[in-house]
Length: 267
Ligand SMILES: C[S@@+](CC[C@H](N)C(=O)[O-])C[C@H]1O[C@@H](n2cnc3c(N)ncnc32)[C@H](O)[C@@H]1O
Image 1 (cartoon, rainbow, N blue to C red):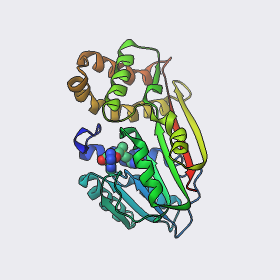
Image 2 (image 1 turned 30 degrees about the horizontal axis):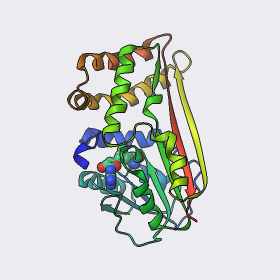
Image 3 (image 1 turned 120 degrees about the horizontal axis):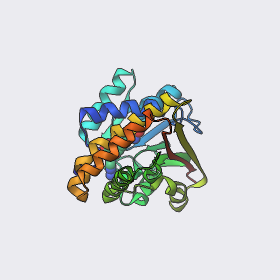
């Protein structure tokens, strides 16, 4: 249900999605070979920002996207129009797509399967609307891999609460599962890569600061739900946030996490 969606649908969250897609603008097209004239459907397209990056990287592709939230689709429509792009955007549940069988050359999914209880149903539906020989690409993370130096019990509590909140309506560690999921869903030639990120104080101070801010932008708005839904201790969570924010100013500060990409082909 969209009411349980962990990030919500505020204008601030939509702006965060714009910045997030720009942050990953090299990872998004990596390993893909979309040709002009081919069609791509993004499942869980949210604010349309990833579709915008794909269209800039692969000029001439035909864009389509679905999201079950109307505010996201409205934002996506406006965002893509401002970029001079047109797209077939629909408000619908990923488990029941309205397109006919074998409609698309490619499916793209990013930061989406983490929000699903039952990803195999959505992958089966993706496979249904994909043409034989078409590709599916997933990018997801593992929230338990977000680790900091120096260590902090408050930060550990924050990270555990983050994972537990995702797990209420999805899967906090789905990144490590996506390659096997594509195989299980019947896709062939599956390629699954992990991108380890690690930023340190000193030589990477600016990258560290920027990545800490990026991380806080999605964690901080989730704190009220951690308190309400998990009964987590607000003061401990706030101290965890303060610790995370402080690491960019520490000489021994560092932040690590893992991102996974998986690509498969429909037989
Ligand atoms: C984090 S956003 C996706 C971000 C987007 N892929 C990007 O890279 O910018 C996740 C989106 O999935 C949507 N969503 C979650 N479950 C869904 C479902 N079963 N069907 C359709 N959309 C869903 C939410 O409304 C939300 O907009």
